[in-house]
Image (tube, rainbow, N blue to C red):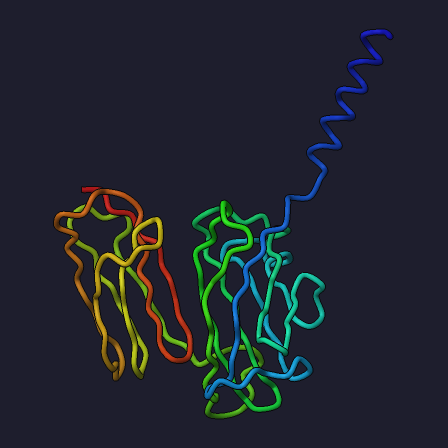
Length: 220
């Protein structure tokens, strides 16, 4: 076989290898209405996306997308997000709505491509007060500045109701509780990570309705 033919075959092999879609990465969990009832599949809608991915590829819809499934017998849902080409430490967001009862909820998780399938947690949907949200839950805002930081950072939260704000290390362990109580609006906290090693941390705020996670980098 000539060198030219060998080169062409090798080039074709490389092209085919790079053309293969990335392996699926599955995020999953359990979903309940407030009170513990499991939504009926025909009433449920949800969308899932990875923050930062291109808009035309960044959303998975249930029940229209085969990558999203839900089992109304036990409340389990799955979303295969591998085609979104996520990276470890990307933020995954999922929003649920029970269109028959106006239960709405959401959650966020930090993608870990080394864990497949990756379990989020049990999600409970409270009743949304008002008109249908079209998959936009009653939510709150969480922001941190600056990042990276070398001595302290400001954690800003804007929302109402019961909320927990905690800091997690890169392997998902809680390392610092910032706040656990009731918010009446905008709050600000200063975190001085004295005694903490340099690295990546995550600030997570969670209420009865939804949650938000932000990554921060500590460089002492």
